[in-house]
Image 1: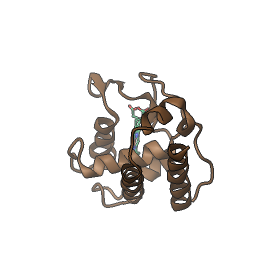
Image 2: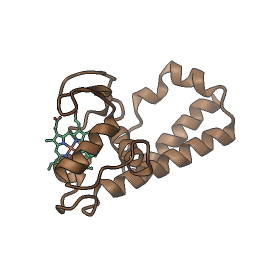
Image 3: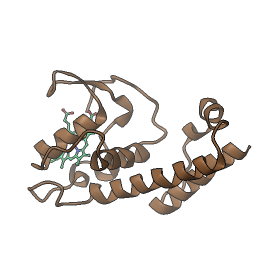
Length: 149
Ligand code: HEC
């Protein structure tokens, strides 16, 4: 029960912070509950706070026209993280000629679409952008490898 409440608190906080109302179905999946049962209340709180911080940082970056050099931001082409399909990664992308993670492809958009500097994989910036786009696409079923954009 306690862990289920923890989940609900996270989504309530996120929804309030980002101005949305619906909690995702995925948060209620049995495997999430089974894992959470081992977590201490302190760790649950820390996880929620830090994850929320990364999502909010990602939202700022998403709208930042100084990320690259051409005055665009992610939102111009991906309003509210549309058409980013994080649930399909890792997958093959022809630009790389191999299977890539979503951070590698975000980086591609930074240096190709925004004409900005390549960022460190696992660094603060790409992780925040990934956090935001994952949050905005929550509830989508994982479809690893599904071709797109
Ligand atoms: C000028 C338009 C433009 C901007 C700005 C842009 N993108 Fe993209 N983005 C695209 C296009 C076009 C594709 C499809 C390329 C492909 O899949 O081969 C794409 C694809 C993606 C994908 C992969 C979608 C998939 O299904 O494979 C992600 C993730 C992504 N962009 C994230 C970002 C992020 C994050 C930013 C900001 C840092 C950004 N994009 C900025 C045009 C843009």
